[in-house]
Length: 312
Ligand code: 13P
Ligand code: SF4
View: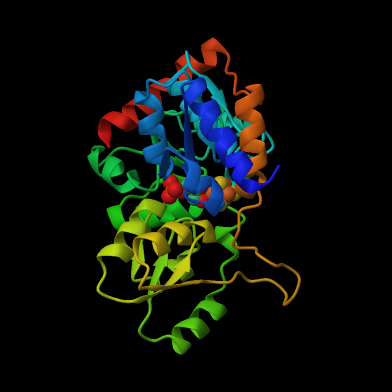
Protein backbone atom coordinates (compact mmCIF):
# COMPACT_ATOMS: atom_id res chain seq x y z
CA UNK A 1 0.00 0.00 0.00
CA UNK A 2 1.19 3.54 -0.60
CA UNK A 3 1.27 6.22 2.10
CA UNK A 4 -2.01 7.82 1.01
CA UNK A 5 -3.80 4.47 1.21
CA UNK A 6 -2.50 3.91 4.78
CA UNK A 7 -3.76 7.35 5.73
CA UNK A 8 -7.26 6.77 4.34
CA UNK A 9 -7.47 3.29 5.92
CA UNK A 10 -6.34 4.63 9.32
CA UNK A 11 -8.96 7.39 9.06
CA UNK A 12 -11.68 4.87 8.20
CA UNK A 13 -10.71 2.43 10.97
CA UNK A 14 -10.40 5.01 13.75
CA UNK A 15 -13.93 6.27 13.00
CA UNK A 16 -15.41 2.78 12.69
CA UNK A 17 -13.80 1.62 15.96
CA UNK A 18 -14.10 4.87 17.97
CA UNK A 19 -10.32 4.91 18.41
CA UNK A 20 -8.10 7.81 19.41
CA UNK A 21 -4.55 8.02 18.06
CA UNK A 22 -2.04 9.64 20.39
CA UNK A 23 1.54 10.39 19.38
CA UNK A 24 4.61 11.59 21.25
CA UNK A 25 6.69 14.43 19.78
CA UNK A 26 9.50 11.95 18.97
CA UNK A 27 7.37 10.05 16.45
CA UNK A 28 8.02 10.41 12.74
CA UNK A 29 6.31 13.38 11.05
CA UNK A 30 3.74 11.21 9.22
CA UNK A 31 2.56 9.67 12.52
CA UNK A 32 2.44 13.06 14.28
CA UNK A 33 0.40 14.45 11.39
CA UNK A 34 -2.26 11.73 11.52
CA UNK A 35 -2.60 11.66 15.31
CA UNK A 36 -5.62 13.12 17.16
CA UNK A 37 -3.30 14.26 19.95
CA UNK A 38 0.42 15.03 19.78
CA UNK A 39 2.09 15.76 23.08
CA UNK A 40 4.68 15.19 25.77
CA UNK A 41 4.42 12.41 28.37
CA UNK A 42 2.21 14.50 30.66
CA UNK A 43 -0.26 15.53 27.95
CA UNK A 44 -0.56 11.95 26.71
CA UNK A 45 -1.28 10.69 30.25
CA UNK A 46 -3.82 13.47 30.88
CA UNK A 47 -5.61 12.73 27.61
CA UNK A 48 -5.60 8.95 28.25
CA UNK A 49 -7.23 9.53 31.64
CA UNK A 50 -10.08 11.52 30.09
CA UNK A 51 -10.80 10.08 26.67
CA UNK A 52 -14.18 8.55 25.83
CA UNK A 53 -12.75 6.55 22.92
CA UNK A 54 -13.03 2.74 23.12
CA UNK A 55 -9.52 2.17 21.80
CA UNK A 56 -6.35 4.17 22.51
CA UNK A 57 -3.53 3.72 20.01
CA UNK A 58 -0.41 5.03 21.72
CA UNK A 59 2.29 5.89 19.20
CA UNK A 60 5.20 6.21 21.56
CA UNK A 61 7.14 3.79 23.72
CA UNK A 62 5.99 0.97 25.98
CA UNK A 63 5.87 2.89 29.27
CA UNK A 64 3.56 5.46 27.63
CA UNK A 65 1.17 2.68 26.56
CA UNK A 66 1.35 1.23 30.08
CA UNK A 67 0.58 4.62 31.64
CA UNK A 68 -2.48 4.96 29.38
CA UNK A 69 -3.65 1.44 30.30
CA UNK A 70 -3.09 2.01 34.03
CA UNK A 71 -5.19 5.19 33.84
CA UNK A 72 -7.87 3.68 31.61
CA UNK A 73 -7.92 -0.04 32.47
CA UNK A 74 -11.30 -0.59 30.78
CA UNK A 75 -10.08 0.67 27.41
CA UNK A 76 -8.19 -1.33 24.85
CA UNK A 77 -4.70 0.20 24.60
CA UNK A 78 -2.69 -0.64 21.49
CA UNK A 79 0.90 0.19 20.58
CA UNK A 80 2.15 -0.22 16.99
CA UNK A 81 5.34 -2.07 18.01
CA UNK A 82 5.63 -3.88 21.31
CA UNK A 83 9.44 -3.72 21.07
CA UNK A 84 9.37 0.08 21.40
CA UNK A 85 11.02 0.14 24.82
CA UNK A 86 13.06 2.84 26.58
CA UNK A 87 16.71 2.60 27.63
CA UNK A 88 16.00 4.84 30.62
CA UNK A 89 13.14 2.67 31.89
CA UNK A 90 15.36 -0.39 31.27
CA UNK A 91 18.10 1.15 33.42
CA UNK A 92 15.82 0.64 36.44
CA UNK A 93 14.79 -3.01 36.91
CA UNK A 94 11.96 -3.26 39.48
CA UNK A 95 13.68 -5.87 41.69
CA UNK A 96 16.81 -3.72 42.07
CA UNK A 97 14.79 -0.55 42.59
CA UNK A 98 12.79 -2.33 45.30
CA UNK A 99 16.04 -3.09 47.20
CA UNK A 100 17.06 0.59 46.89
CA UNK A 101 13.65 1.73 48.19
CA UNK A 102 13.74 -0.78 51.08
CA UNK A 103 17.22 0.38 52.05
CA UNK A 104 15.79 3.91 52.56
CA UNK A 105 12.45 3.34 54.31
CA UNK A 106 12.13 6.94 55.54
CA UNK A 107 12.27 8.36 51.99
CA UNK A 108 9.42 9.42 49.71
CA UNK A 109 9.81 7.76 46.32
CA UNK A 110 9.47 10.08 43.33
CA UNK A 111 9.79 8.36 39.94
CA UNK A 112 10.01 9.72 36.45
CA UNK A 113 7.19 8.49 34.20
CA UNK A 114 9.85 6.72 32.07
CA UNK A 115 9.56 3.57 34.21
CA UNK A 116 7.83 0.21 34.06
CA UNK A 117 4.47 -0.34 35.77
CA UNK A 118 6.31 -2.47 38.36
CA UNK A 119 8.57 0.47 39.30
CA UNK A 120 5.55 2.80 39.43
CA UNK A 121 3.96 0.35 41.89
CA UNK A 122 6.94 0.99 44.23
CA UNK A 123 6.54 4.76 43.87
CA UNK A 124 4.76 7.45 45.92
CA UNK A 125 4.54 10.12 43.19
CA UNK A 126 5.23 9.91 39.47
CA UNK A 127 6.54 13.01 37.66
CA UNK A 128 7.27 13.99 34.09
CA UNK A 129 9.86 16.51 32.94
CA UNK A 130 7.05 19.09 32.63
CA UNK A 131 5.93 18.89 36.26
CA UNK A 132 8.92 17.47 38.20
CA UNK A 133 9.99 20.82 39.69
CA UNK A 134 6.44 21.86 40.51
CA UNK A 135 5.73 18.57 42.29
CA UNK A 136 9.02 18.38 44.22
CA UNK A 137 8.49 22.01 45.30
CA UNK A 138 5.17 20.95 46.89
CA UNK A 139 6.84 18.39 49.18
CA UNK A 140 7.81 19.55 52.71
CA UNK A 141 11.29 21.09 52.77
CA UNK A 142 12.81 18.48 55.06
CA UNK A 143 11.27 15.48 53.26
CA UNK A 144 13.84 12.83 52.32
CA UNK A 145 13.35 11.87 48.70
CA UNK A 146 14.51 9.08 46.40
CA UNK A 147 14.40 10.04 42.73
CA UNK A 148 14.61 7.48 39.95
CA UNK A 149 15.63 6.52 37.41
CA UNK A 150 17.23 9.45 35.55
CA UNK A 151 20.35 10.82 37.28
CA UNK A 152 20.45 13.79 34.89
CA UNK A 153 16.86 14.93 35.40
CA UNK A 154 17.21 14.21 39.14
CA UNK A 155 20.43 16.27 39.35
CA UNK A 156 18.78 19.09 37.44
CA UNK A 157 15.73 19.08 39.75
CA UNK A 158 18.07 19.08 42.77
CA UNK A 159 19.83 22.13 41.32
CA UNK A 160 16.64 24.13 40.68
CA UNK A 161 14.82 23.18 43.90
CA UNK A 162 17.77 23.17 46.32
CA UNK A 163 16.88 19.59 47.35
CA UNK A 164 19.27 16.77 47.89
CA UNK A 165 17.27 13.87 46.46
CA UNK A 166 18.98 10.50 46.44
CA UNK A 167 19.38 9.57 42.78
CA UNK A 168 19.09 6.24 41.00
CA UNK A 169 21.94 5.89 38.54
CA UNK A 170 20.03 5.61 35.25
CA UNK A 171 20.14 7.52 31.97
CA UNK A 172 18.74 7.70 28.44
CA UNK A 173 21.03 6.53 25.65
CA UNK A 174 19.97 9.39 23.34
CA UNK A 175 20.30 12.31 25.77
CA UNK A 176 23.54 11.04 27.35
CA UNK A 177 25.25 11.18 23.98
CA UNK A 178 25.02 14.88 23.12
CA UNK A 179 28.44 16.35 22.66
CA UNK A 180 29.59 19.50 24.52
CA UNK A 181 32.29 19.96 21.90
CA UNK A 182 29.89 19.80 18.95
CA UNK A 183 27.38 22.03 20.73
CA UNK A 184 30.12 24.62 21.46
CA UNK A 185 31.21 24.55 17.83
CA UNK A 186 27.62 25.00 16.61
CA UNK A 187 27.16 27.90 19.05
CA UNK A 188 30.34 29.56 17.74
CA UNK A 189 29.05 29.18 14.17
CA UNK A 190 25.58 30.45 15.18
CA UNK A 191 26.15 33.00 17.97
CA UNK A 192 22.60 34.35 17.57
CA UNK A 193 21.02 30.94 18.24
CA UNK A 194 19.50 29.93 21.57
CA UNK A 195 20.28 26.50 23.03
CA UNK A 196 17.22 24.47 24.06
CA UNK A 197 17.89 21.26 26.02
CA UNK A 198 15.87 18.46 27.57
CA UNK A 199 16.70 17.81 31.27
CA UNK A 200 17.67 14.22 30.46
CA UNK A 201 20.93 15.67 29.03
CA UNK A 202 24.12 15.70 31.11
CA UNK A 203 24.72 18.70 33.40
CA UNK A 204 27.60 19.91 31.19
CA UNK A 205 25.06 20.39 28.37
CA UNK A 206 22.37 21.84 30.63
CA UNK A 207 24.79 24.50 31.91
CA UNK A 208 25.18 25.77 28.33
CA UNK A 209 21.43 25.95 27.65
CA UNK A 210 19.32 29.12 27.44
CA UNK A 211 16.26 27.00 28.22
CA UNK A 212 15.89 23.58 29.86
CA UNK A 213 12.54 21.85 29.69
CA UNK A 214 10.31 19.03 28.51
CA UNK A 215 9.47 18.54 24.85
CA UNK A 216 6.31 20.67 25.27
CA UNK A 217 8.35 23.28 27.18
CA UNK A 218 10.97 23.43 24.42
CA UNK A 219 8.27 23.77 21.77
CA UNK A 220 6.47 26.57 23.66
CA UNK A 221 9.73 28.41 24.39
CA UNK A 222 10.79 28.39 20.73
CA UNK A 223 7.41 29.82 19.73
CA UNK A 224 7.44 32.61 22.34
CA UNK A 225 11.12 33.56 21.94
CA UNK A 226 11.95 36.59 19.80
CA UNK A 227 15.06 34.73 18.53
CA UNK A 228 14.96 33.14 15.10
CA UNK A 229 17.48 30.33 15.43
CA UNK A 230 17.70 27.45 17.90
CA UNK A 231 20.12 24.63 18.65
CA UNK A 232 17.91 21.73 19.71
CA UNK A 233 19.43 19.29 22.22
CA UNK A 234 16.87 16.51 22.37
CA UNK A 235 15.47 13.81 20.09
CA UNK A 236 15.11 15.41 16.67
CA UNK A 237 11.44 14.37 16.19
CA UNK A 238 10.36 17.48 18.13
CA UNK A 239 11.66 19.67 15.30
CA UNK A 240 8.64 18.74 13.15
CA UNK A 241 6.22 20.60 15.46
CA UNK A 242 8.72 23.44 15.99
CA UNK A 243 8.88 24.01 12.24
CA UNK A 244 5.12 23.70 11.83
CA UNK A 245 4.49 26.30 14.55
CA UNK A 246 7.31 28.61 13.44
CA UNK A 247 7.88 28.26 9.69
CA UNK A 248 10.05 31.40 9.61
CA UNK A 249 12.49 30.15 12.30
CA UNK A 250 15.52 27.85 11.96
CA UNK A 251 16.00 24.74 14.11
CA UNK A 252 19.34 22.97 14.12
CA UNK A 253 19.53 19.46 15.65
CA UNK A 254 22.65 19.05 17.80
CA UNK A 255 24.70 15.97 16.93
CA UNK A 256 25.73 13.36 19.48
CA UNK A 257 29.24 12.31 20.53
CA UNK A 258 29.94 9.51 18.05
CA UNK A 259 32.76 8.59 15.73
CA UNK A 260 32.35 10.33 12.37
CA UNK A 261 30.36 8.06 10.07
CA UNK A 262 29.53 5.46 12.74
CA UNK A 263 25.99 6.65 13.25
CA UNK A 264 23.59 8.29 10.86
CA UNK A 265 21.07 9.64 13.33
CA UNK A 266 21.97 8.99 16.97
CA UNK A 267 19.77 11.86 18.05
CA UNK A 268 16.82 9.69 17.02
CA UNK A 269 15.46 7.31 19.65
CA UNK A 270 15.63 3.82 18.12
CA UNK A 271 12.66 2.77 20.23
CA UNK A 272 10.39 5.68 19.30
CA UNK A 273 11.29 5.16 15.65
CA UNK A 274 10.19 1.52 15.65
CA UNK A 275 6.64 2.74 15.03
CA UNK A 276 5.68 3.32 11.40
CA UNK A 277 2.53 4.32 9.54
CA UNK A 278 2.21 0.73 8.29
CA UNK A 279 2.44 -0.69 11.84
CA UNK A 280 -0.07 1.90 13.04
CA UNK A 281 -2.49 0.78 10.33
CA UNK A 282 -1.97 -2.92 11.13
CA UNK A 283 -2.43 -2.48 14.86
CA UNK A 284 -5.65 -0.54 14.35
CA UNK A 285 -6.91 -3.15 11.87
CA UNK A 286 -5.97 -6.24 13.94
CA UNK A 287 -6.28 -4.65 17.40
CA UNK A 288 -2.89 -5.99 18.38
CA UNK A 289 -0.32 -5.65 19.97
CA UNK A 290 -2.30 -4.77 23.07
CA UNK A 291 -0.94 -3.54 26.41
CA UNK A 292 -2.25 -5.77 29.20
CA UNK A 293 -1.67 -5.18 32.90
CA UNK A 294 -2.49 -7.45 35.77
CA UNK A 295 -5.30 -6.02 38.00
CA UNK A 296 -3.26 -5.98 41.19
CA UNK A 297 -0.33 -4.22 39.51
CA UNK A 298 -2.70 -1.68 37.92
CA UNK A 299 -4.19 -0.85 41.34
CA UNK A 300 -0.74 -0.23 42.84
CA UNK A 301 0.64 1.69 39.85
CA UNK A 302 -2.36 3.99 39.37
CA UNK A 303 -2.00 5.71 42.77
CA UNK A 304 1.28 7.57 42.13
CA UNK A 305 0.12 8.57 38.63
CA UNK A 306 -3.18 9.98 39.93
CA UNK A 307 -1.24 11.82 42.62
CA UNK A 308 0.91 13.35 39.85
CA UNK A 309 -2.17 14.44 37.88
CA UNK A 310 -3.60 16.05 41.03
CA UNK A 311 -0.34 17.90 41.80
CA UNK A 312 0.36 19.03 38.19
P1 13P B 1 8.79 14.52 27.56
O1 13P B 1 7.84 14.17 28.65
O2 13P B 1 9.51 15.80 27.79
O3 13P B 1 8.09 14.48 26.25
O4 13P B 1 9.95 13.43 27.53
C1 13P B 1 9.74 12.10 27.22
C2 13P B 1 10.98 11.39 26.89
O5 13P B 1 11.01 10.21 26.75
C3 13P B 1 12.18 12.17 26.73
O6 13P B 1 13.20 11.35 26.30
FE1 SF4 C 1 13.44 6.57 26.52
FE2 SF4 C 1 15.45 8.13 25.78
FE3 SF4 C 1 13.80 7.17 23.94
FE4 SF4 C 1 12.97 9.08 25.67
S1 SF4 C 1 14.54 9.27 24.07
S2 SF4 C 1 11.86 7.22 25.08
S3 SF4 C 1 14.09 8.47 27.50
S4 SF4 C 1 15.18 5.96 25.24
